[in-house]
Length: 540
Image: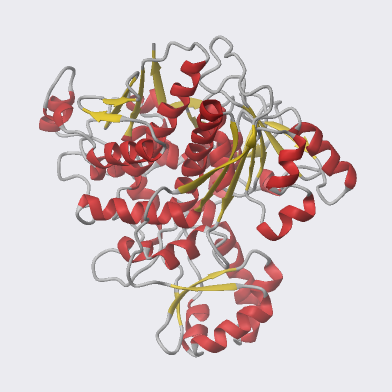
């Protein structure tokens, strides 16, 4: 478990010391860049002075009792190396500043929310975020799974996993969202049904477990076939192949696009209620599955917004994915009903509207909800949006002034995390020395993509109040990946190994969750399942 040496602990123990003098430069640069991109003035000093009226404090540990003073320290102490290292069989540094970039995005989001709240009379004067809290937020679903009752029955373990290699040396990621496509693809390559079936569970579960041990027969099958033929077979079977880029592509500009729409409706804003948080009075309709969209909705809920998820009749199928928890806290994860721990970690505290969007009745129920809301947040495929009556023009007619936020993968064949890592070149930064490019099975793009989408949504709410015009936000997994690539370049290279300054590497998330030093970041359900608290501290 995370432990510290005397020198590092002494530096962190109360009052100014060595660690207090070490500023998280990457996190500060990311936050300042995003705020300036939104047209907000930032003056750098001990605090980031935002808009001339708000201080933004970004530290390594914040209210946590961890003696950390670098990205590597945070990754070691907070479990990032442990989860990333599952595919390698041992904790391994994630060679980009994931926690620092996440902290920077969260800091900008909190500052924008506080600036908006000040328009309605809130007395916020300072917002604080730490890199360690951002790291724990990024591991929310893994922490919940590790602390849920009976979790040992649900998680495959073992090193290895994609990418695959074709006969002509092309390295590629494969994505299959349905079992029949997976079976057809491998059957066409001559792999037996039994092997294909055994491989499906760890492959399907890899987004929640960060491990993907696959039989050698699969890798041998692709090595016997040229890449062009593999592409043809994949197209016939409904699976996607993505070439692993050898170099990273750096983001140019903001990680979201913000455009003004029509004139806002008569209720541009609502007065904040006491203790609601900076987004109190905002209602969000969330139509999203998997990780990216729900993370964005979770951030908005933690900032005080009322978030209502639209789920299919009978509920989101991901509710039933083990390990299960009976979590308190109301909304999606409350009511004493068992729900997936990972699902609860991403959706806790949200309301639910069950509606079949394929039916006229279901679409009518969603339209009625939108008429009383401030934001539509969705991750629907562009080809489906118009047919459901949820395109930007149709929604604007329902609710003039509504903020329209769309989270996507970033392009054809880029609907999920690992293909995006491969395509963007992020995978080229992540592999340990001596190994070819390969994505991390930690869902870095999904998590950061959700944070970016939430930040863009808050920026849109603030812009709407400032200009009186409705706003449209577009963000993607690809923009999140490129933001990480750019931060790696600013940091001057890969993150080094942890433990060099006295911080031992976390090897058990369940033990980490019970460590009193991280108690300020976590709360527990009735059955002991751990959930990550809001990562901001707002001062008045």
